[in-house]
Image 1 (tube, rainbow, N blue to C red):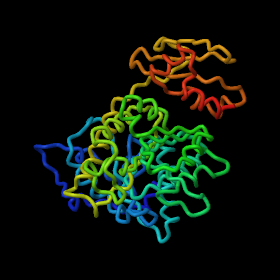
Image 2 (cartoon, helix red, strand yellow):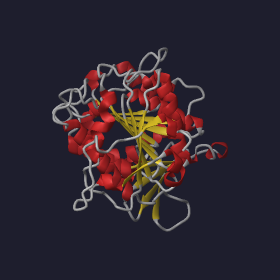
Image 3 (spheres, rainbow, N blue to C red):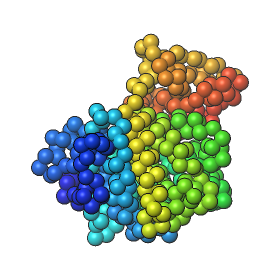
Image 4 (cartoon, rainbow, N blue to C red):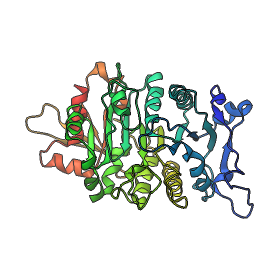
Length: 391
């Protein structure tokens, strides 16, 4: 592995994990790579755990760089999800002399894993690390959908170095830009300037309030299924459930809801990178938050081990195709429903010249509710926003 010099190897004894032949746990199935053997074992891996001890641009949450090993203490001691799942732990990326050095290392590591068709599972660190993750996709020329579970939009002025509460603006202002869509799940209105909401709407991005999401959590499944990258800011979970965060607040998701979202993420066939950020052991109580993140990762792994191969195609018998004629709309709305999983997609009309570069974005995950809306001659919001970006 060309980027192996960026890592500090994990000492499992310091994590409190020792082999117990009577109780086989997840840590027993996680491979630790040495530089001389990394390429061979990495080629067989499904998921690679990457810790990042970087928190110099954390806002009101310095100390979150200590999180990776704290999460590992609980993750390693959980029972295996699927014994056939091949997981490697690459260790922790060394903190660079400058934050930009850490960014460079994380970008290079993620890019290398993506090229090897291995999912990077990032444990931070602060959420500005989403920026070098985006740069990794940019470096390999892949246009992506980014989904963030976060009580805020993390927008700033865009003229400063990105931090944990401004990285999104830095990504949006990149030119050329490789982010096709951004979706926020669970924002809390009292933390968000209405001008930020207007900006996202003007860009045809998606933002869903916490109350809206918690009314029907199943509606997050198509949101997450549409993601190439998902980042989870632990401050999106209420303080009573996850005290280990300097920006924790009384409201947010419950722990079981966070786990359900991560299970949906695991099931999402196109999702190729996931990150957990802003967990701060200095604020945690009895490892409560670290333990919750370990369980969230466990649910992601469970979903991944059950990933269905049900992406729609024009040919094949595994899908039911529905065509809805919309008055006043030039193109019919085309829906696909999987016979195996009951999951839904909408097909967007796209010109021939854009078909090649945007092929991954022509089929938009949706829900049965979107189909019912179309049946009432109401254009689903998901379809409209995606269509505007294709025009």
